[in-house]
Image 1 (tube, helix red, strand yellow):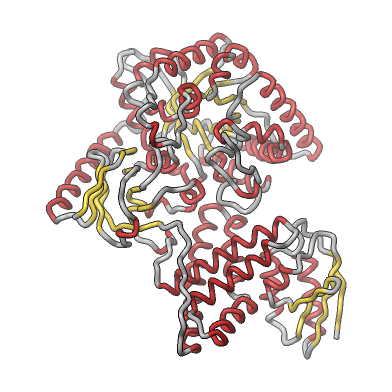
Image 2: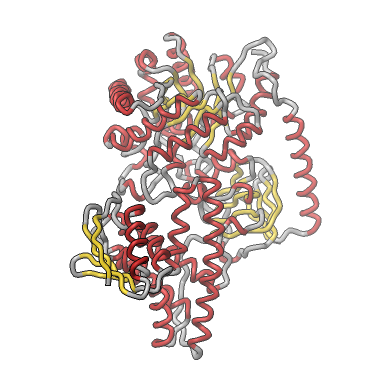
Length: 85
Length: 540
């Protein structure tokens, strides 16, 4: 399993559009990708669940990636966060 | 054949299929079903159809309002794809043996409640999006044609009433006429109809439940009547009249490129009023000398959040460049009263017309105002832009505005972007502004008289109240006296004065306005050539 931590830079937090793009992006990989904040977590392919976590600007999330292609998935998803979140 | 009478707000004729705009939510009934899998199949098909509609809406919005504002339709597509949402619908159908419509409606309510309960304004607002996609799905399930103007053939829009945000979303190419149950001659439906040069009837006592999409309708603005399912003869008559009107219009076209000058040589500027970037096409088509009123509200209405500086800058710049050196007078945000956007959180007011609106919002929430000013001043570097401030009642307000403009100027200097402090004028639309127009003229570069609000405030008559249409006399002596006074006071200080309200297009008054010495009349694009004709026939 691979993990990384990320602090949200987007002023509005994780809002609909990036969350939707993330869901799309995540479907490219076999690995299961989960986003966590405190006690809450959601699979990133589940748009409304991710939005429902209400992650705000400046908050830190942990992303866990587990599966056959976790190496590439982790690298790509991390890059995606840097660019869009 | 069924005939109704109404009040005509634009004298023209149209024939076409009806498109009924129903505002109310669908009444979804819970029904017991036998075959859950068949019901789920229906959901799949409806989702597909809804996705198609959303793709079309997105493309249309990109073209008309830009990618940033179109993104909402992309988000809707993503939401429809959401697994939890879909799972919840399918589960409910399987476990409770209910119809798809019911499962979608309940799921929509559940999810939207979840968002409505979050302690984040942005997420709270998403509740409306979930309601929206659920409604869309239910409509697709019912086989009800959605009012997606993208897929609609040119139609006569039939509605209870139209809100500004609804009219903003409409594809103007697809509208042959408006027929509404409510609305007054000064409502947004009326203003839009005049702008687009299409017939409109308001106050028509029809029952929307009895009208269906596709039914043939004749809208006759000359006789102020609407006929559903007309007899063949009536239809032919109407078509002949449409042809006649068309020929008259062609005759007007010969006035293109001609000067706005009276027989004795007096000149006046005739500009156009517009409400969105795409309206510039109407301005050019009708050969207006400039834009006398560019309502900036389109950037704010029908949105989920404040437009960014960049978004505004691009829109203003685009119009300034398209107008290539001709005057473009942009009015700052005039929201409040009958024009509402949820994210402003303006709240309910006892007297919205006398309430927190327009410049009052800008002076209280200067952060909103400054974003617009920055965008305007930056765009002014690319063309002949003037800024106009609405709802002024005192010299203090104008002084305060100028202080804010100075602050913005300083900010722009610091980041070193190209900008210009353009010509700045004010709307004269309160009796107070008229009474102190001598003092105001010393401060500002020009006056533009907003006759709609000025008449409403002077005669103490609510524009939106259809019961008062009989009392609303736009030719009231008090109004004409005020216009004369404002013009004289402007001229004493070497400033110019114009009219940008509906009265400016009143051909019965063109002669009077010329006599008063007004410098400019700003009218709906469709009226530019008609006013030019009146000017050229006058001896003043």
